[in-house]
Length: 344
Image (cartoon, rainbow, N blue to C red):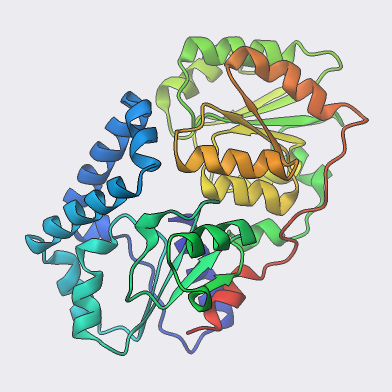
């Protein structure tokens, strides 16, 4: 969703002659959201070892694609929506749903140009579609992955992953800190609770972070969870070194004021941290893509994986030490959207 929104924002500002639209297909067919979340949630969260097995075997990808394809035979909502729009081109930012309709769309519009943004740091066999014109990837490693599963090299373009243009806007960090109630020059640790954690464990983690010496600030984002937000509010409201929100539409500002980010290893979160050169502490990566994303971070000295919550405070302390240096951002300009749109 965030990659699609970034592409739309860029198109509106820089390609005004293009009639661009960002579509969440679950708004067209809400049953798809329940279907995808149920299948992925059950496998990746409740039975992660099963998801890991499925993720690492090409035969599993073939079976998954066939399953989604047959579901598409009895579902015409998305296909009819696209038929009515008669697009010249489509850029996809989610590969899971493509077997539902991609073959039918290409048959209906043989001259349509189609590309997909690979929003993680690993390319796997599920991405292989003969009718896809372009694959937009973040890094040479992902390009190599796709070539190894049989995708033609000329279709693969290293562009970076589209992120919100706001991440590239230069801002006064001192003013941003004041905006969020941070009135000192201490380091800031951004805690995004997108990983699985109980309110009890969250309270203990925040207490341990705030007890670090030298002192730090902690900014907590509850990622929309009312339970976790209430835990922050009931236990830390008014603390001079802690600020928190249930949800934010200004994640780029929080990341800019932060020295370390603690979160899960989703593709966009990784890309946002990489763009700002913020080290990411990864908690409980989901087997499969998040593990590959974590490997990418560690390989490039841009992040650290922890095995349990108790390790986070000491890892944070190490990342904030004066002798810990990090490389320049791998993506240093707002170029991913520009590079992608040149093919359309």
